[in-house]
Length: 189
Image (cartoon, rainbow, N blue to C red; front, side, top):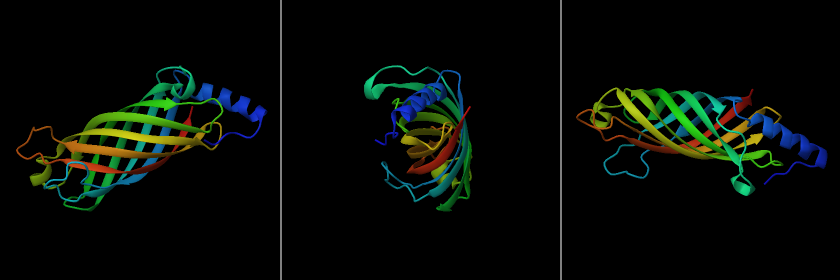
């Protein structure tokens, strides 16, 4: 893991991370990436590949707790996203997702790994033979890391799995299972 060069910087870094990840602090993030489908359950599912761009705001739910590699905190975030389909039957996917995230924060590292899971509401014009209707649900899981460029700025990279379906509220519900990388930048305040 990347370590900060000297003892004075290490002390400043530990204080910065403690402050940035303190309960009640906020994070704003702009993210963009691409998701490819089908993955995992592929039987009779067509290829639907799409970009995804999102604006996310989160708040720290807890202070840093624990020791060793489990040291970290919980974060809750809301995200609005829009997607352009570049391969497959449709033009767009758009929606909102609510995320729970656990940040693995070490006192002298600029790299902060995280695990996250989310659920939300989605709208799309994908063929009704695949998704059944405009209104959909989304379920997401992801793993990633932030690299702190400065005291309040981080560059983020994650791998996200997204499932979109109507939860059998329409005649057709083949759904979408997509996976791909997301790159973003965050500001903490």
